Length: 351
Image (cartoon, rainbow, N blue to C red; front, side, top):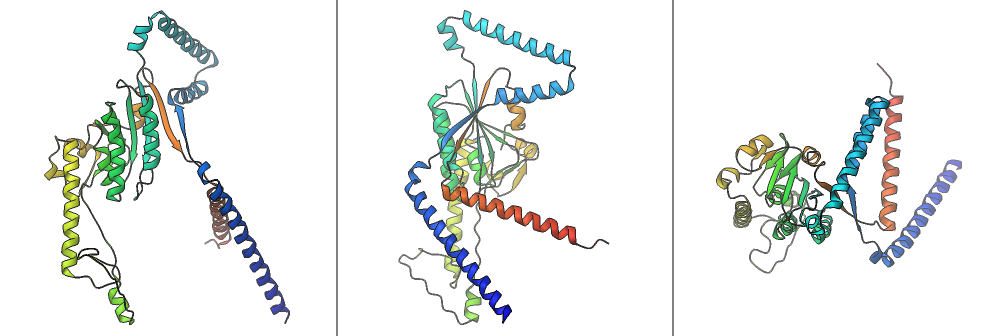
C-alpha cells in the first residue's frame, strides 16, 4: 500500500508539472503572437581589417620583444598619419575618383531547403544600397544542394549583384555541389580550396514505398486526384510503370534546365562532360573549367587587407521569446545528456 501511495503521489506531481508547463507555453505563445511583427532582424557589419589587425597585434605582442612591439606600433601609426595627410591634399574630385575599393563579404550555409536564402536576400539588398561598380562582393558558399526551387531563388539573389554591375566572387572552402554549384556558377569568378567538392550537375529524387507492407497487413490506401499526372509516384499506393516513366521524364526536364542554366553562366564549360552528376575536387574542377582559381576564402581576404576595406555583412534575425526559450531548453537538454554520458563512462568498469 505504501508503494501505491508514493506512486500515486509521484503521478500527481508529474501531472501538475505537465499542466503548469502547458499553461506557461500557452501564455508565451500568446505573447509571441502579439509581438511577432517586432521580431524582425537587423543588418550587422564587421570591419575585417580591424578584426584581423587585432589578431595580428596579439601575435606580435606575444612573439616580439617589448621594444620591437613598441617600434612596430609606432611605425604603423606613422603610416596611418602619412596616409591621412596624403588624403587631405587631394581635391574633392580626386578623392571621389580614387575612393578605396571595398570588399563586402557575405556567407551562405545551405541546407536542403536553402533556408539561408532570406538572410542572403537581406544582406544583398543592404550591400547593393551602397556598393559601387569598383567594389566587389565575396560570397563564402557552403552547400551540398537541395530543393530545385529553393536554390533557384538563391541563385537569382546572387544574380542581382551582377545585374547591378558589381563584380561577384564565390569562394568554396568545402563544398558547392548540385544546388550549391547552381548558385556558384552565377559568379564572375569562382575560387575553390584544393579539396573542396565541386559539381554534381544532376537531379535526384528518391522515396520509399510501403504498399506491399500495407497490403500484407490488410490496410487499404486511397488517393484521389484530378489530372492524369497530379501524382506520379506515391509512398503508400501501388506505383505503375507509366507513373515511373512520367516521373523520370520530369527529372530529365529539370536536368535540362540545370544544364542550360550552368551553360549560360559558364560558357567555356563542356556541359556534356560535366553534367553527369559527378563531383570533382577543386584542382580537378579547375582543369575542366568549373572554377577559376585555387584558393581559400581566408587567403583571398588577407591578400587584400592592405589596399581594400573588407566588410562582413550579415543579416541577424531577432528571435521571439518562444524561440529563445526553445534554444535554452535545447541547450539544457544537451548539457544534461553530456553529463549523463560523462557519468556513464566514468562509472564503467575498467579493464
